[in-house]
Length: 128
Image (tube, rainbow, N blue to C red; front, side, top):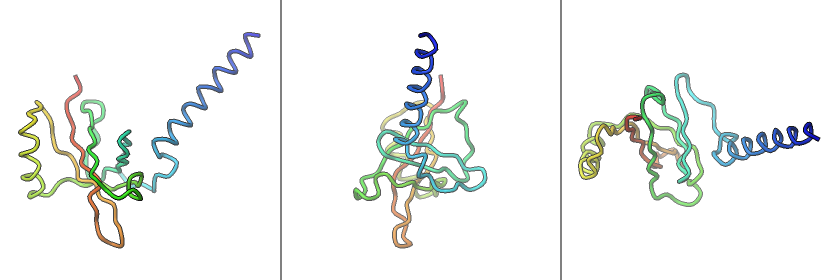
């Protein structure tokens, strides 16, 4: 009897982990460039960060999704470090919130007909 309970618990755990990975979109994630890492958020933002150092052990990444058409809501986006003019535009938004230690990490874009469409933004805060 104990053997069946343990087997049922293991199957339930594997099933949940598979479902969680499916819901996060990891089965549809495109190939990642060398040194990139991915993040998936419940708000629908799925991000592959390129050219940004991974600091998950010391920082918590926050994803802010942009208002996009329904067909882009679950698309994987490639994220890059922000340009200087983007830093200036976002600095006012971030200063209004005044979150200590918050950094603007990335701009996430999806290519549509060869044109970049902003899918969202990534910031990070220190883990405490």
